[in-house]
Length: 132
Image 1 (cartoon, rainbow, N blue to C red):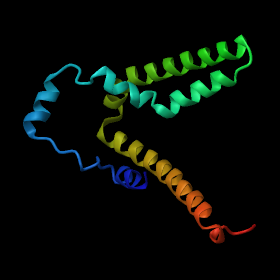
Image 2 (image 1 turned 120 degrees about the vertical axis):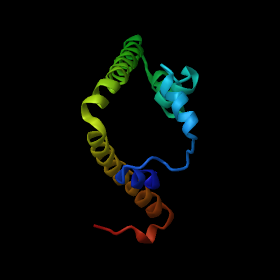
Image 3 (image 1 turned 180 degrees about the vertical axis):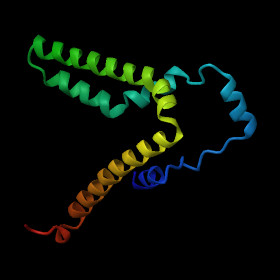
């Protein structure tokens, strides 16, 4: 996660993904290149699914289950709106704006990754944990 954040801070793509100019040209000619079953786990991965299952299992009433469904619908609408606005927003931001936002989100991701590392190291090595 930290390596991905460093790439984002430099506004670089992963670098691991190579494609030929012919593949890039073919992709630009197509209207939509995404395959729906492959895109679904990116929006609702295993962590999300397990969280929903546990929340539904812990709900004691129909009201709690109904609120969970309403939450899912609201989040789905927000994701739909974000995906629909992605192209107009990217045109408006331009390359510079996208690079700036990539760097900002990379900084946030780096902070989260460092927090994960620090938490994991303090659990593995309790002597590193400083008492306040």
